[in-house]
Length: 210
Image (cartoon, rainbow, N blue to C red; front, side, top):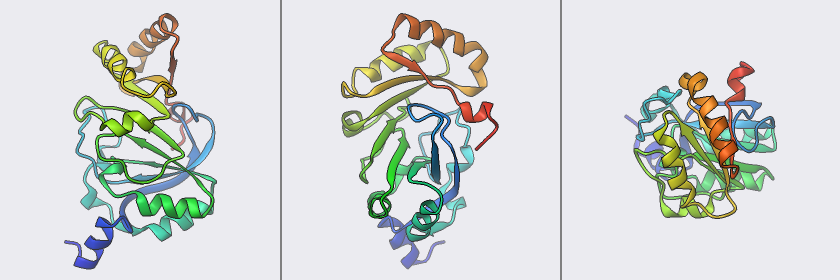
């Protein structure tokens, strides 16, 4: 049970349930191959059955951490911070992004877009999920649409989502890791037939890095 003061700080976004933070090479999507400091926030009720960080779902397992500490840690390593989860937009991201920007950092997010948008983002990676579709604003501001392909029907879902994002969003299809051997060839064929799409691979897993 959190104290009233801590709960209030969490509600205001001054503390966040931090699961982990680490400096690494981005493995997916538009910024693949570039260095960034990742901040993984606990808490998610989207419930993707193939999620590879299910331990992030229960926010109660991850201690509320002052954003001042998160910002200080990030600035020690990198100029770019990627906020991920869990589902980071479960929480108010305003204070965190403001603080990071005040330190001169670029701030990216990886999100399902299923919650109201808070915070100011230099790069908004939208990875929509069927269980909880994005809010309209997420489609409008997305710099990148990244759809995970787990089965053939997901190509239909991907096209539906591509119709909703703004025209400048970069479109990616990414094989779900546990089915990559079967799905990757299908994505290759699909992108060759539909070149508006690009392929995203989880290269960090091939490189055996976080």
